[in-house]
Image 1 (spheres, rainbow, N blue to C red):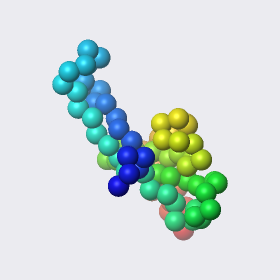
Image 2: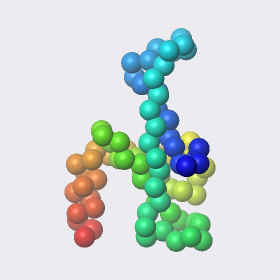
Image 3: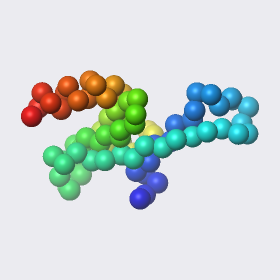
Length: 81
């Protein structure tokens, strides 16, 4: 897995002084509806408390990321089916 596929989050319990901090990562997956030509692709990363969504045209960590609850994501994807 490439480093670009992971998005790291610092734990809210970690202080700002450095030292012992906990970080967790989620894996980004490109939508199966996105082609291999590049351009407009949707990527998602699922965690227990949020679904993170981004436009793959932007390099990791440089573009905006939208976050919704897993319940909202399930409702959205079920409405598409």
